[in-house]
Image (cartoon, rainbow, N blue to C red; front, side):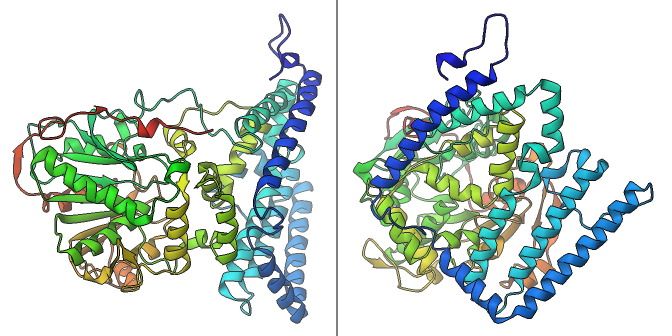
Length: 596
């Protein structure tokens, strides 16, 4: 903030006039920065970078071909509104009324009691929900459209519907109006300050602050499980964690996290750290901490991540512990890499991984969910032009993920940060979510083209790793697949598609919640639930029909499976005891690298 926006002596409130003077100056600066960024982009003249226009044209064409459908939909909406008006009139006259439509139980936008108790706001809420349902039903029944175009129109229509919710505006949100009257508008002044700060932090991009950024620091109250970095190369540091038991399982456990975001999602705080819990169960845990790349790593390939990631880690683990064999976990894209690595190792006759666990990892991308809407030939060309610097900025990928849950990850914070003027509360998971990583150009484009766009990983011999054609159906390693029932990034039907592909014994487990909370669910929290099927059928419908529900965390279920593949107990091994010397304390330097 400029000096003009400082508080006056003896008054802890900002002067709104001075704030808005500051807004004018800051807005002018941000507009210039934004325009300069757009002009500098190769292909910046592309007015449809998300390739949405064709889908909406197809939608419009199909509507014009069938005017009766429009008439039928309009009549249905009109009848719903007539019923709503009748109910509201009944309510205003003192009679009993009933809602025409209710928000979903998980919808946090209308939790304030005024949305139900006050007639005007109840009418606004129901009018909005009826209109939203009308639009989505109209799209859903457009069977003449190609499935992909219909999905794209539905997704971007939902983005518009979410944006125009009455909860997102001062005059139509009863909670915001109440707080504004109670504080004399101070909430809006605070919100404007937050908005400016977020724009400035994003250098012309709106970088919404989701949590108190000052409440956490990696290595101090996040990623604190004791350990040492014992190996590193261009792409990763390898952490070996200190044992907390006198004996450990003979086979070490390697974790391959995604390089989209940072590894410490698995080591947040002591109470919810998967790493700390696994160490406590008697596993010698090694963690790959991927580099946050710059332009010097632009040409690192997907199979370089294999060679300098899990394969290099296996060699280092043998030097550190004397053990050739190990077990392994791959999370998200780390699991996709793990599958390709196992297939490569099979061809090479390398059987050092004796068991493999996959956290929310996809190998067959034919039904990979709404992320596929951001990936087609035109969008990849546009993305490649934006990556001329050699990498994709982390905030770009974060924005994509946030759009998949825009009400929870965008509009919730717009209302609370900017309209209610609240300070974000400390939340470790949201701090991690904002601690983004860059993605190297060659690897990222390969992943999107070959996995999402062409689905080549699942086609025998269609992909090669270090010149070796790979075939996932040759993998014989025992495997445990975890999926999240509400996962919007790796939908569980997509994760399940790996089950009939692999040759070895496969156990599939479905956890409650989504892509993150479905994984980070410590037993002590006693949250959510999970499903298993001891018969392990290779058909999802049969699996679901015979699944048994269990309360609480799935971690102990995995532990029972994992220890059966981990060998006998041996004396605990400490970092530095073997042939690898300690480089530095965990969590290491790589995870702390941030870019503006």
